[in-house]
Length: 420
Ligand code: NAD
Image 1 (cartoon, rainbow, N blue to C red):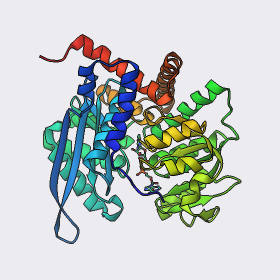
Image 2 (cartoon, rainbow, N blue to C red; image 1 turned 180 degrees about the vertical axis):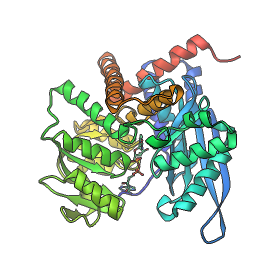
Image 3 (cartoon, rainbow, N blue to C red; image 1 turned 90 degrees about the vertical axis):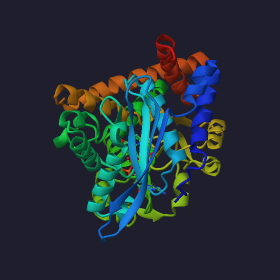
């Protein structure tokens, strides 16, 4: 397994930003504004543990930019969560919402904890104390959390319930959190939205090159919300899933792994290790298995220069946030391996979160077909904008994503001005 590295993640995010800013000769004032988050909130809060003791946890909420609307972004529970990581993830949310024309800004949050080591009761108490500690920094017109690594729809429902209890406004509470269970106001299609969005992005890429996804081979790192949904959808589209890795190990089957059967196994046993219908392999060899589509869907900084040298793939599908380091991306470009960037490929989650927020405002429930169709329209329009910028500048797809986002932000800054 590759180590969890977050050192310098915000500087990676900023280096990507400055490259695109250079391309459009971005005004120095906007450059300075967008180079730092607007607010950095750190809270330390006590939680009653099952053994009767109290443990103090550290939580973060970074509000990068709200020029286009309320801050929006996931909440991560992972032992490696720190200020640098959350700042980078928040900035990426700003570009993602702007790129996809969603009327939200960019934010991200997290708690440094291991959710697998907490009981259900402890997880609920961590979530409730964290939400309470963030207080009025959250709200449907202020800052709207969603799930990310280590959190899920249940955690979002606890956040919503805590917001309702502490604010006394149950209606606003629904719209203050997205990614909830359907019973508690969530949207149909939100659970699979990030994986579904990656598939729509891939279909756009295949369409650009007149490729057929059916019969292509794939590898997926991470079999959580994003990885498993992506894997099952690719399976339905006739993609052969050759290898999967997660925090428990890696498995391979040249003939193809049944994504639905693997999901049943992971639900029961907590990871891919021991899956009886595939062969276990050394996780370090995961990247060398020849595939068309290599899909990192776990942690950041997984495709290092060393991995990029030995990666045997046609395209990297960044379902995770920040899986490719800057130096690795340069190596991939030299090797002719395409990179489909995170800000586009995993934007399905935030787009359907926006749909959930809209449904909560009007007390509607859209059908799954409506959600999927509107998601596809949104992402294909974003991908079209990206392709036209690639042609305009002859730049990389990531740079083009950033240019689209920055132009959107600059248009609003220019009209609104910078107060006072
Ligand atoms: P998750 O917690 O549901 O799953 C994470 C997966 O990563 C698990 O399968 C875990 O085993 C695996 N993993 C953890 N450590 C690993 C390691 N060292 N090596 C290999 N695998 C490891 O998380 P998720 O929600 O699926 O998020 C995955 C990625 O997608 C993150 O980068 C997240 O920011 C991004 N993302 C998620 C969403 C969403 O809607 N959930 C939206 C956009 C982006």
